[in-house]
Length: 152
Image (cartoon, rainbow, N blue to C red):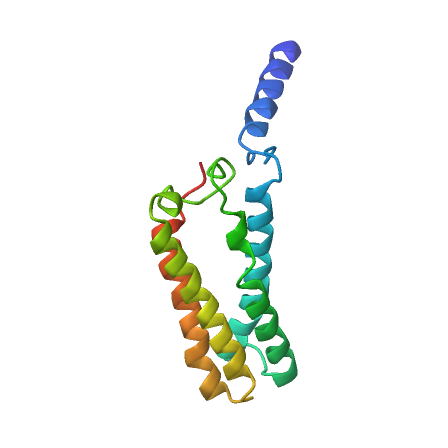
């Protein structure tokens, strides 16, 4: 009975380990590099969203710094969408490569929105910042809808 239980436990552990996310073993690891940048963008954007929505107190200096960092990050992930980088663990849809002009337009929309948020942050006025922040969120959402899917 114990031997049978140990076999089942070992099979369960092996099965669960296969459920983990695929490792990026490709040269230069473009998927890993762009995912790191997108996670940094998210970690930069989330605290600003809490402020804009009134959940956290507004600190003008911190918000300006975050907006400047977001603008800097906004141009960085795109270089890692190289030909042949549509492999697990990517969440990019094939449209990234099938519709490069549309993907480039979505990138530019985000870059422009991030620059607009950075400019609005210089005003130290939440009424000016809110619509600029909404533009960034909108650019993210529209790009995700068209170009980001579920994990492979």
